Length: 181
Image (cartoon, rainbow, N blue to C red):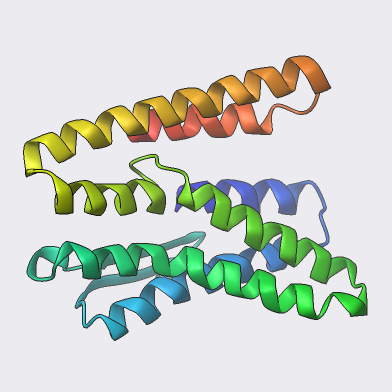
């Protein structure tokens, strides 16, 4: 969640008129996790709200991996639904609405990426645990997470060299690699 705090802070400092749109996308994402946890009857272990931080943890020890997978995918599903709703409202041609759709789609795409600290990594962990024993699933998750972080880093370096773009993707890939360890 410090990833969100980093972007929110950068947008606020840079004078962007949309930092609260990003916060709204993030709230939608977390509401998806909470919604699916309630549907799947996964007990909420801890909900902690602080400045630039929201921490939600679930007690998945008593539920099946399929139910945990639904909870992990809930945030991405809610972000994709918000993109669909935003696309239906696109005719209003609002700058904030356009930014909302892009942020929500970006948040969904980033979170489905199979790095262990993201929702995608947790989803693949559940899938591997359904298929393999715990030791093999853990090894598969580590390798998939490492390869995914490395590919993201390569894409960032390529984008920096070809497009001479900003280095945000590069720093995101480094950040995700560090917290993955």
